[in-house]
Image (cartoon, rainbow, N blue to C red):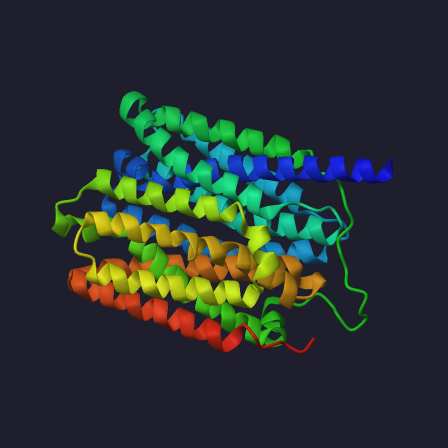
Length: 395
């Protein structure tokens, strides 16, 4: 009887986590993908829009380890409550943006605050999975993350049509609804005690102590940062890559949809793949896939080839994302578990911010310069991962 109850609990928690992934990524992807569209239509100059988006990204990278430090020190596992609070702030920002006649700068600051909170939730979403798994509440991550990826792919298509047909107001309304559903799901998670290591020598560390305690882990995350730089630059400047072949935003949308769906299909089998491949090899394969993609993009003869190359998402990002979570769980003490996830997510997020900024600078020097720099970024990330993923930090 007890075993049957545990099975039901497992299925229920996997379903709840899957729906949390769906509602989070639907709202987060929707808010991020159409940020430029919303802010420009609000009347802000493009330079101000770029500054606001860069600040939101950088602030989230700073905030993530701080929130993780609070979570690691809590007596009870606080992640569902923290995520619900951040989701509530995002909802409030979107609700206030519905007010007519708001000054453009005020709209920009509110939207930036919403993005900041949304990005800050990303490591907490991963920590939610790790925390319950370490607390003997098993969740099937691959299925849940696959649903999140499909939600990301579909929301971009749906919101694009909604904005064109009905305006940005309905985009905000849909984002609010997804956030409210996410809050309701988060409030329904069972309360568990914070997971602590049995080692007496282990203690929750500060951010600076984390760098000293987990030097090899942080070095591996530097590799993730470089891969994030290439990935963000490749996706966000895809319009410039397809332009010489006569491509426009519709081809970019098709390429990104192929990429998201290919990644979602592989994420469905992430747990099974992890049973056959070590985390270290998943990271190595991800790095090699990003490197191969960067080289082949440089030599791509046309848009059809680019569509095919987007299938490499199956072994690049779809391997990197779950492997980052597994890697933190394996290499970081339980006391620092949330912080480990935060550093992992912050490394990738910081890489994305750097890739977005450097892409704009490099594009001024020419498309070939941008593509060559992408090869350099992917190569640096791959080499760092090969040099560090087998190294163990002394605890």
